[in-house]
Length: 236
View (spheres, rainbow, N blue to C red):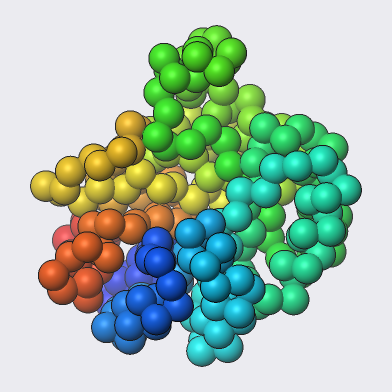
């Protein structure tokens, strides 16, 4: 496959900075160097360091997937989104289960400056666990319902496991961004994820971006791990 395809896949890989503090994040980003350009800042790192870590990464030329999974009343979420628009992030997540009004409030508050992605069903959940919280039927059905709700509310994309991507593409079209956690390279363990796929499978299904954490951050050589994942994504 030509080199431009390799670079395209590299830009579609999001490395999850699920580390305890800024020092650990900075060290990991330094080790990775130019092998990756997109990083996820989630609840762990954001709680430890606050908005400053997002600003720092953005100013260094990295893209930031700000994965806060906001879920509150529409007014509260709207105020949080307004504050987030000034941090330099490239994407921000909210929970689709917050409902249509909350999703619309988030999109309106972003004012076109920050793409809003709606989280459908966490990749750690399966059919039985959804049933325990009152959601009947297959997980895929719930993902499709919430993704359609998010699309109708004006969200730029959704977050779901790679196992639902193909169905989402068929029902919602090609314009919606689909970001997929639960990515496990060939030979990697599933950890606490339930609905997983390999990088190649997720890309073939139609995912726009893949989020990968432990297979990279816990690897002896994170850069080598990234190169192997990018190679899987291209099908090499």
